[in-house]
Image (tube, rainbow, N blue to C red; front, side, top):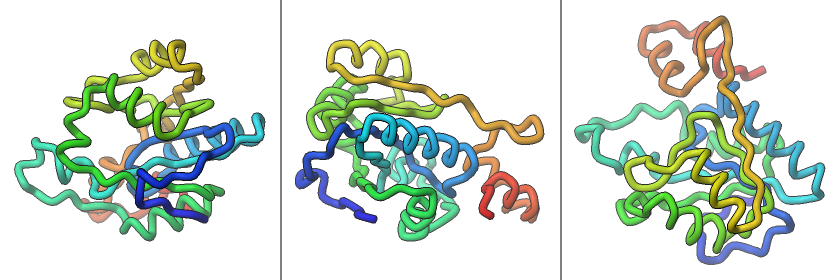
Length: 188
C-alpha cells in the first residue's frame, strides 16, 4: 500500500478510478463504494485510488463551533482498514480553509482533472464538495462530458431500515450501543 501525502508529487496513474471522502470508520457504506471502485478499476485495467483528507473537513469548516469531532479511527487505522478492503493507493489531501474555499467547479477542474486525469470517479449518494458543499453528482456528471471521464454514484447502504453513516455509528457508540455500531461498521 502506498500513502501519498504530497499532492504536488503524485505519479502518473494508469487509467485512474477515483473515490473521494473522509471514510471515517470505513463502514459498510464505504465498503460498498470501495468494492465498486475495485471492480471498475479491474474491468479497465486501471488504478483504484482513494482520496481522503486530513484533518477531517468538519474540523476545519465553520459550523462545528470549535467542538472537536470524535473520529472513529486514527488516520493510520483508516489507511489499514482501506488496505484490508484491497486499496493500494491512498492520497491524503491536506484539508485547510484555502482548499475548502474552492468553488465546486474549481475543485473538479483544478484538483480532480488536472492532478489525477481520472478515467472514472465513483462517489457515494451523499457526496458533496466545493465551497459550502455546492457540488454534487449532477455537477460532476455535467463536467464529466467536458473533461472525458465517467462518473458513477453508489446508493446508500441500508441495514435494518437504517442508512449507514459515520454519524450514526458515533451516535451508537456514545449511547453505549456497541452491537449496533459493530453491525454498521461491518468488520469481520
